[in-house]
Length: 327
Image (cartoon, rainbow, N blue to C red; front, side, top):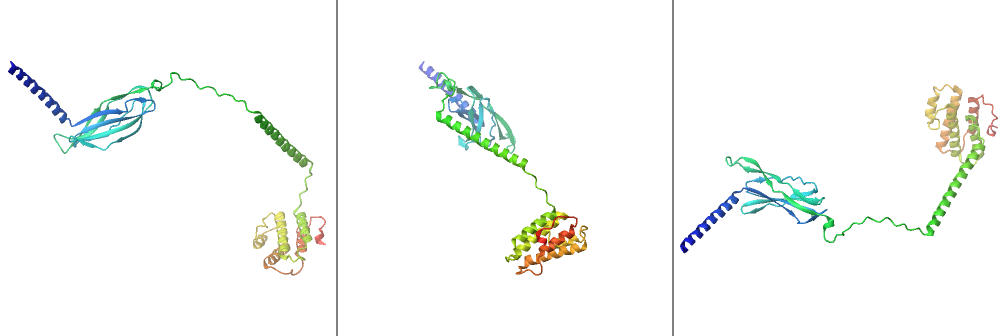
């Protein structure tokens, strides 16, 4: 009887060994497998979860990094791949995904498809494409109210307390208001005074080009620059007065043009006769020569009288009394 029991035990052990050998042989024959994990173990709103897909495969298989679609409540922040490792003559690739938790409750990541390239058993030189699924994984997100140490009741924010300002605050406000009123009153008085003066002021009559020229020539003669030895300054002003008269009377930019440009303009200018054109040319060239030659004395008569005579002859209809410079 003892021998019969030993025989039965040996048979059971042999059968179990055969089953285990078959199981290990089946596992060893699997060319590619995928597993998933997520860390840490507990989550609350705002935490970051690391979701990892591990792909274990034969060396001649080439997997691709899977693209995951996080469910509502999880936001993909970053992703990457760890360096490959070799274990039991197979290669392990770890693909990680950093997710931000935005919702509470149970959040489930669905099975993720993983594509790979493997050699064809019939044609080893040819690669064929395959797909496996990484298993789904879930995580439990707790509410902040449910975590240890959280208050049992959330109270609303209290309204702002009104603190009465000190009396000095009202004093400064009063002074600022008085200063503003005084400034506005000063501006109003100044504006009103200016407006009244503008109304009462009589508009000055507009001088004709001849009157303006006579006025400027009288002022130049009163300076007596020639007797003071300031010859160039005298003829500079005289030239400007004459050019200003030509510009105002005949409407061309005499003050900006050179003497040559003015003489060229006179060639086809119908408002002056030939005699006046020659006189104008003589005045311009004479004043230019003294202005730029640094003369020590004046040759000939003073050109003020020449300019006055030109104005009188160019505009004989003007009947104003001649200035004192003409005497």
